[in-house]
Image 1 (cartoon, one colour):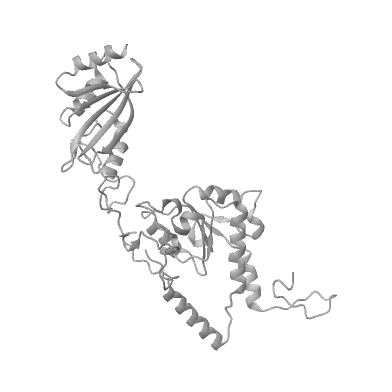
Image 2 (cartoon, each protein chain N blue to C red):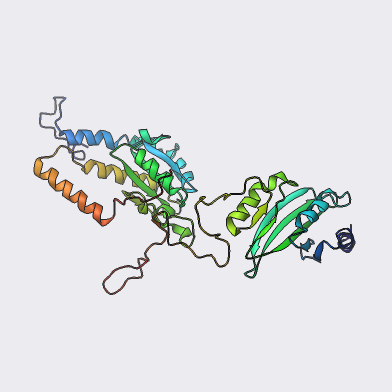
Amino acid sequence: MELHNFITLIQERLAGKVLSVAEMKNDDVMITTDREHFAEVVAILKNNSSFRFSTLMNQSGADYTDTLAVMVNLYSGFLRRKVTVKAFLQRENPEIDSLVPLFRGIDWYERETFDMFGIRFLGHPNLKRLLLPDDWEGYPLRKDYVYPHSYNGMETGRADLLDVDAAGEAHV
Amino acid sequence: MLDRFNIVNRLSPDRDLILTTVDTAVNLARANSLWYLLMGLACCSIELMQTGGPRADIDRFGSLFRATPRQSDLMIVAGTVTLKMAPRLRRLYDQMAEPKYVIAMGSCANCGGPFDLSYSVVRGIDKIIPVDVYLPGCPPRPEALTEALIKVQEKIKKERFFLKQEASQQRKTEQEKRGKDGSGIPFQGSSRY
């Protein structure tokens, strides 16, 4: 299917549920939606017989300083096309519907996105930190993240041995 | 060879008898049976495996790997220690029987290395456990790790257990002093692990 035909088809089938459908440089298509319609849009893309985007390629988050975003990359063997579905979230209350009911394998992806960005996935069966310790404070991949000076009594800094004062003492 | 190990042959060459001190004999045995705990945490552990393999063959020095801290004399920390791993590392060190030795292998274990600007990596394992030999490199070659092992052996051979009262007291004072300087760091981590 030609790219412009494909974009027209998406705009027809998903009318009112998407904010924009844009062509990307790598022959990919970026579908921007909002958090209320995110799971619904992905469900239609997966189950509609004219799309069949049944392969989950990736899931990720992003911080645009004023908003957060969730992205999911899908592939359709039927159309031989990729799409990226993206939803912007409020920074104060980043919540979005989980895609675990649609793709079981997205479980750990969403946990990592929660771990790094603090985005909560509603309806996720086991939403807890994946990589960092459970008692970790803050979400490291956010732009305003402040690096901790210590964790459980362990310092996280180290003195620069080349940065010494007149008395020969190094400073952290 | 006899000179190297402080063994004195006081009798004529045709007699099969050599004399030495208990310390020397014990240290000779300990230094040549350094069993190390498998602590491969990142890419350095590939070099650690190579060192145990046939080409570098660390077995020549009586050193072979153990999968449990209860049977280990030496901990070779090969790789990046994250803040999440740090309490486990400390616990494994505590489970080893005295006397015990530690080699910090590679830049990450020495000082955080390439992860110096990261949020989740311990900046050197000497913030958690005392270290005997720092081995630089990213990663160090098997020859370098063998050299580090020989350094530990040299350290062991210098140790004395059977001492007179004064010497024993002096050793104790030295140890206390060393502790204050920060080599024996008390770990204040969470008690959950």
